[in-house]
Structures are given as C-alpha cells and as structure tokens.
Length: 141
Image (cartoon, rainbow, N blue to C red; front, side, top):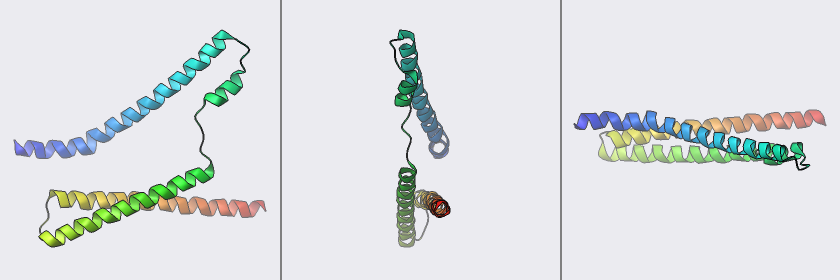
C-alpha cells in the first residue's frame, strides 16, 4: 500500500495540481470576460444614450505600463532566485549533515533548482528588455 502512496503523491503534485491551477485561472478570466460582455450587452439594449466606446474602454482590463511590467519582472526574478538559492543551500546543508539523501532533500534540491532557473529567466528578460528600451530611447533622441 505504501508504494501506491509513493507513486500517487508525486503524480498528483506534479501533474494534477498544475492542471487544476491552470483550469481555475482560465475559468476565472473567462467568467470576468463574460460579465463584462453581459454588462456591455445590457447597456446596448437599454440604449440610454450611452457611449459604448467609452463604456467598453472603462470595462476593459487595466493594462500595465512598461515600467510596471519591468518592476514585476525584477521583483519576481529576485523572489524566485532568492527562494531557489535558499532551498538549495538548505538542501545541501541537510545532505551534508545526514550524509544520505532522502525524498525531502531530493525535493528541496529539485525545487530549489527549478525556482532558481525561473528566477534567472525573469532576470534575463528584465535585463534584455531594459537594454532594448534604453536603445530605443537613445534612437528617438
């Protein structure tokens, strides 16, 4: 019976959980879009001299500016990188203390490596986009 739990838990964490998260996020966005469309249709049906273009613009999702996107990339890059480094260090310390690996240490090292890779990719994108913005600003002047 224990071998079954040993198989089901990683599969559910690595496969089922991400699928459920993606489904929930997409369902939430679809519901928000449906609500917006419903409000717009009701406004059009009422025909109370409502400027549909202004209403559509007001009801649309707020767009992030380039600076806000860049600051989010930098924040996420630092957060993922630091948490990845912390998990890797903690996993290595545990490995050196116990001298033998177990499932928890393996998951710490794997999760730390993944988090560090995600953080570095965010920081690389931040760096590339900021250089591109500087070059485009220099070209405009």
